Image 1 (cartoon, rainbow, N blue to C red):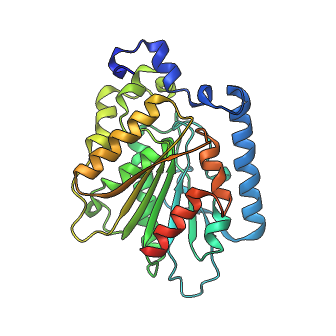
Image 2: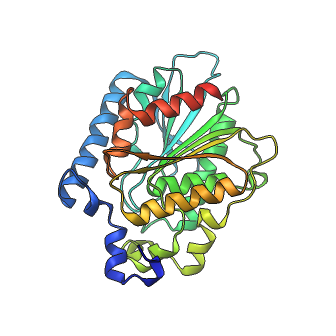
Image 3: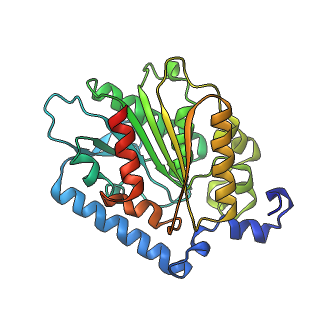
Length: 292
């Protein structure tokens, strides 16, 4: 496949339309099924787990998170932040608790992070909000035994931006021990040439500023952070390229990083299946957390 710069706008739109690449169902049906699956999974989690819902981590209406907590009275649990996808303009924390049950039952706290999606939120604001949520949580739960990030699609982009944070600005030093980046976008410039950018109104300069692949530095001294870059078998060639190139950039900079192509999944069920304890990605996440 040629470079994205050589593609027509129509081809770029197709490459960055994940629903058009599903092997399971038509594009509208796969999105409807995705939202239904996330909502039902979140409802099950909230019905069965100890929760703290709509916890504000900032002043904006969108700056709230939902906590799914293990029964560990000391608070010395590992904490995983889940950052939802939806192309920075769709979905919310209200449908982001679906992955909690298999983790919480193994003693891992899960925070489903909300942020102001477009058109209300711009890229600058969303990146800052997610970073603020990390700072808030490490202050709120000082006994936690490590922070882990998990993001899907646009959420993988935001999680990757967390890895390039200057924490001095936030007054904390979070012990980030793992990041699980699923079907993400790490170079935003192609997005500026697609329909996705209509509500985002992202300039080329903003795309450069907030492209994780352009922000990769050596891992902080003494860090033991493991990064997993995962992509679905039935993601588009551009999503595969983005994942592969970001993985290579991290490896070249000295990060502990692996790349996982998950068979028989598309852009949507690759994350939906985190509600299942036996799913390969759930198992990988639990193994990394256990080792950390």
